[in-house]
Length: 258
Image (cartoon, rainbow, N blue to C red):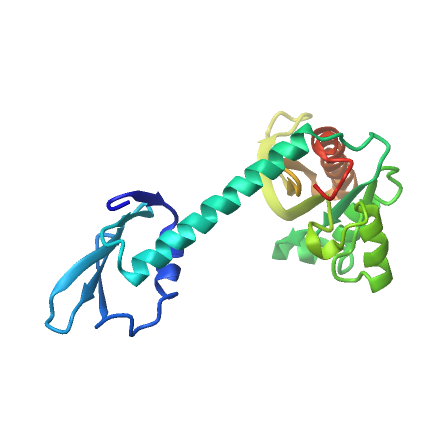
């Protein structure tokens, strides 16, 4: 519809402009003012026709529905709306479906903790922090860590069977993704014994935990004295496991093909 608004990121709209090769008309001219982009079609006589505009907030206004570039944007908009509708339908189907049992495994992609330079240097050996945190999951009866990069073909086949017989290329190989970072910071307070101002170096861990079936994302943090980093790592892992088992676990469908 002429003048209809499509709320999408400006970067997407700019990329869509490149979908139509030059030669569809005499040419196009783009002007940008205060972050507002206007795209014109220019004919052989130099006459300009406003094709579409992209506002600073990413809103797109189509002015010439017959122009090839405008049609490309509208076609992409329709495709995205259809994909969104299918995704919403899939999510609703998962919400209504039977869920995994509490004792059933949850496959987790636990990515290496991104460490700042200070924490990298503070660990007693390269990779020690990651090994320490991963070790907290080794004996968990429910959580199964998967190695995305090191898995052999046979491992992928076993995982495919575990995921309801579906090919691992057709969906998320993990039920949950965990991305985290760790860093050191100086913390100021008061010494409990002397009551005087004091400071200590604290290690801080932060994790983003994402469900790969329905839109759900959680964050957890843990910090403590760097000299007690093993205890801090253990508490951090416990928080991650709690979210996976108690908040995400009950939403995972029994049939991973949904």
